[in-house]
Structure formats: structure tokens, C-alpha cells
Image (cartoon, rainbow over all chains, first blue to last red; front, side, top):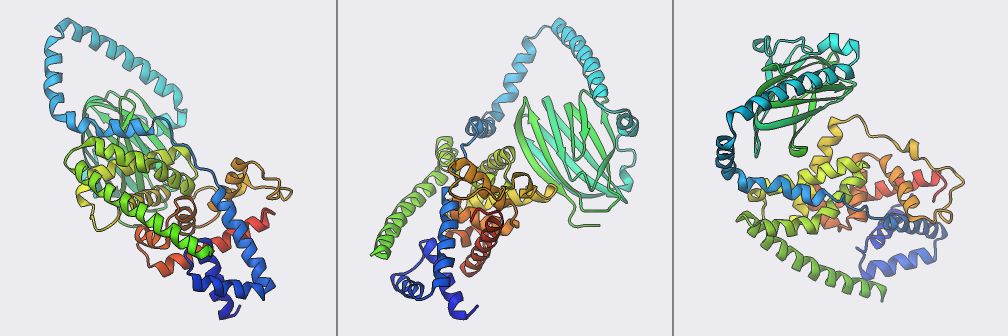
Length: 257
Length: 197
């Protein structure tokens, strides 16, 4: 292809993009008038850009606008939340705490049974509740961490590495139950263990490339991943409070080990 | 004549863009002072374009939703870092771009167009349904590398100029042009192979 054709090809693109000058347009028209091959290319390009411009807009999800505003709104309320909660606590008679505790325990038993039922035997024996939280911590080298300081959720998450193992330690603190989701490349890493302190696992699920669990109050949760291929680990973390996404972030190693 | 019309249109567009930019800067400034209504106006203005760009780049409705949500949360948290020498529009698109890149990195390679491959009997004339056409173009788009997909999305779906694309992608205009031309060439090949073009 000649330099001249390249130049006119560039002008064709500029014309489609509305970024051509009068002078350039005249030159392009003259070139097209005497060059059938260029006219064919021009027609094809026009058809392609026509198709692209016809692609329809996608409607935004109905709840997107509200979700974003809701996620922003609590910031202003954050200071007031503590005092409101304190008053609420004072008004509840102690006997209600007893009922709530009993109901919570019962729910815990039911949900734990449900979680166990959802896991295959292999999954259970491999990792479910078998690991003592942070027992090996000194051997692990911290590679990344994030601080959580959003309404209804505080704490930190740390990603550490020791050989082919990676440990994700969640130190969460919330007045409500927090749903945690960990996304990662399931072809590169798999789960080896999970534990919580205090040990009150309510719901825990693991699928290829995705782990989710609940955390409540002030709780330490530890996920142990194995990464035999020594690939770079990148974790996509999402935190939900009352079903609402309150924080999302990524933890990753600086580079492949 | 057509070019003159084009220039008048561009001048009109420039005036609209300039006014929008001034309005954006005012809204940003008010949002920094804690005015949520101002931020909501920015959200109203840009949530649809950002969602659409993310959807066309990632081809996943839920991911696009997450990205859009994150973009606005991050923008709100980092309003103080916004440099008013730049356009708010470019800044927020850049956040969306980075979020999309991070998401792509953390996932397996996105599916190719195989599942939505169009058989040869489909011709442009038969693709009367705009939704079907969108699906075909989207499938072809997903066959492109991320950098080429991004320029097509910014140019054709977000209607950015070369200059705006250069600002968003932080690359020279010359690179924008060459990347866009290559992307179109690749798309043309893919759609021709499938008998669409």
C-alpha cells in the first residue's frame, strides 16, 4: 500500500469521525473520484461506522442511581449513628437480649447445617473450619493490605504470602452482619482453609474463583489459598451490609513471585 | 458545504461542551463543600454514559453496574484530587477505564464471540432488528484486545473526539488515531469473515 493511499485512508477515518477540514475533504473527494479501490474501502468503512453508530444504548439498572446515593448518604450520618444506637440499646429490656441470643444460636445452628449441606464432602474435609486462625502468621510475609473505614464497617484486610500459600486475614468490626465476597482467578489458586475467631461461622460458601462468608461484630476471619503455579494473586473483595455493597477493592501482589 | 455545516455543528457542540464543563466544575466545587444535590446532578449526567461504556467494554450487565457504582463512589471520595484544568467528564471516564482494567485483570480472559457467533446467512439487510445488530457488533467487539475495544467504545458509543480520547487514555492524539484505525480494520475483518459486512 502506497504512502499516498495511507494518507487518504487516514482522511477517510477522519471524515467518519467528523475531524476533517474543508481542504482535506476536497482532496479526499478528488482521490475517491479517480480510485475505484479507494471508493470500495470508503464504502466499507462508512458501512462499519454506520453499524457502530446504530448500536443501541443500554438502559441503566433501575436501582443503580439509588444504590449509589445510598452508598454515599451514610457518610453524613456516620457521626450521629453511634449516639442513636446507644439510645436504642438502653431502651431494650435485658430479657429481650436473652430471646435474641437464643434465636441467634438457633439460627446459627440452622445456617451452619445449611452451609455444611451446600459443601461437598471433599470441600468440607479439605478446608471447612479445619484451620486455626493465624497460627502460622509469623511465616507469612504481608504483600498488600486495605483499611476499611466506611459507614457500618471498619477494620482491615491483609494479604500475606508464604511459599505457595496465600493468607487473607480479615479483621472486621461492624454492628451488623457483613457479607464478604472474594473473587480470584480459580484456575490459578484454590482454597485450603477457612477459620473464624470467635468461631461462629454462619454462612460460608466456596466455588471456583469465589468465596463468600459472613462476619459479625468484631471478628477475625482467615482464608488460606494455595497457589501452586506461583502466579500473581489478585483478589477482588466486596463487602455488603444489609445486602448493600458498602465497599469494593482489590488486593494484589506487586508482581508474580 | 458539508464541511462548513460540520464546522458549524462542531462550533455549536464546542459551545455546549464548554457550558457543560463550566456547569460540571461548579457542581464539583459544590460537591466538595458537601452538597450532595450537586453530586447527584453529576451522577444523573454521567451514570448512563459510564454504565454504557463499561457494558460495551466488559459485556456483562452486573459488572458494568458494579463498575459504575465504584466509579461514582471513588469520584466522590477523591473529589479533592480532581484537577479542574481537566474536564470532569475525562476524569470520571479515566476512573471507569482503570476500574475496568482492574476487573479484567482479576478475571479469566473474557469470553470471545464464539457463543454469539453469527452464521453466514445473516446479512446487514437481514439484521433489521437493532438489538440483533447490537449483539453482532458487541460479539465482534469482544474479539478485540482491550486497548482496541476501548477506543471503539469511546469514539462510537461515548462519542468522544480524538482530543477527549487522548485525555482519557493519556496517550497522544496520534496514537489514538492509529489505535482507532487498527481497531476498525480488525472489526472490519471480523465482521467480513462472518458475512456481516
